[in-house]
Image (cartoon, rainbow, N blue to C red; front, side):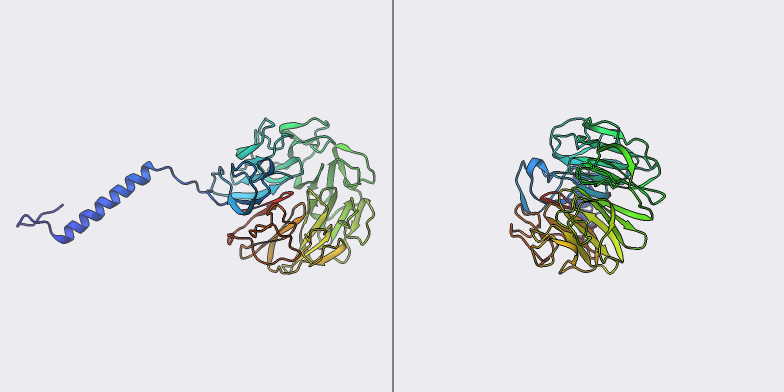
Length: 393
């Protein structure tokens, strides 16, 4: 501190010295304090926490509003996907984090112990897409091959066995894959030539090969080409065509194939009256389907006993109906008895069953139309829906 000739410090110099001292102390505190992770608080989950599904280290406490999922430290999450009671996050470095139920090895961490906080899937790098089925998972690698892990009772891992896997294995004979979708106990892959491969359980014709024979390695879906996206429900499959129409096959007791029948289909049929579709999703753990339209609205069909189609009723629909109260939508997700939409403004809206708080509106009241955005979320870019829980990031 500089002194003047009288020996008294100048006021300006005192202030300067105090500012400098404060800056030094602040820098010291920041240097010694643990740095907050860039991802802290960004991923939020709500609804049922059975088997640690919410990943918030809160035992089995359900949440009626979003709570942070700790333990994910990279600065960017590329994708989220959820199964029955577990979730996966694809990170920007090409690795995958998982949490929740693990009794069938679906977390891919080499054990069957449930995981209350996110853990890294073993021996998995270079991932560009992930998809969670009910109890198994798929990962698409940058080289166009596919890895799988978890439950394998019907060959849904595609490694020519029915052996459960707690770490990833390679799906047999698949190269040049463009997209993946994991369903209830089966799997789909979209190939670079616009055809689709399928494997796993086929009780309801969900593999689309004209049979009801389970397959432990991929087979080609019959008569299907010109596909640009795929989705898998509990026991049914969907394909978005390059012309904006949708094909469906498999189980149809609730009208989830959208062909105005409730007849099972072992090969693809057209969803009635649906054109101009931009994206599709099936309820991995249940029996309804959603389509995001090019105008930002949403159509739904199939099971609607909890109002998950959002048309103000609880009537199953064998053809698509408009979801009320949503517009300017950029992404959709289907849970067991609920549905989520993400708007371009970053708001998450929900509709349907809410017994565990999976709608995130602070209640357990079932909603048959979309009322308000999920509490406390205003700038989300990703959504996923499990059986009775929801996730946003």
